[in-house]
Length: 112
Length: 114
Image (cartoon, rainbow over all chains, first blue to last red; front, side, top):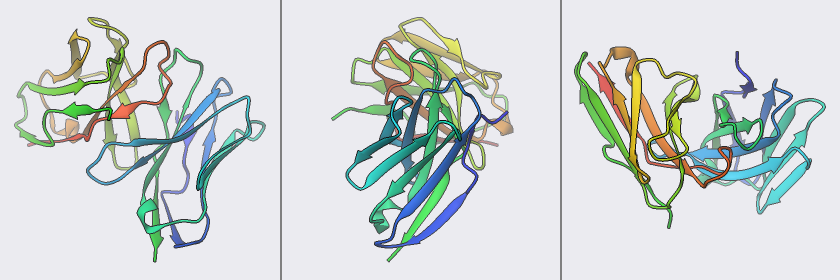
């Protein structure tokens, strides 16, 4: 049973445009969400997170939006840069003493 | 700069061998994790540890065991390697108190079992 779903395996965007990566979840107990970025042959690196008490969190070019009623979150990258090309994983947890549940990832390709 | 180091980038082992994957972190983190990453399946948690000598099963512990004798070191053991354990293995650590905080990952070990 997949509790965190990233339904788009890949996304292609032109440099300078907005990239929107989506994530849906089924577990209503999830209250903390994170995005990780992973380059080939490297480990994932933390990008941005959001608590369920918020609906938006922004860090530079990266913004995460949370819609609790729809059990949906999205990561916006504006403007997209070729160096953003990577696999992006959405992760969620149900409380501080539960581990992270990851989605399958979305490969983003930003072309010049 | 925080660091999680995995002992090998690439490993090739034979079916039936006992395999040890080592991970060391220098951040004095209590929590450590082992994941495997497979195409189309994302990251799946194998085992985790929230303290020395403590270990908990993750989502896919079958065929694996772990050891945490020292705070900075977390080892993953494949008791008898099989071809379906060919995968990218990722170690991670995070700060104490909560298991869901930002985790720092190692560079990964690409294991091939032939």
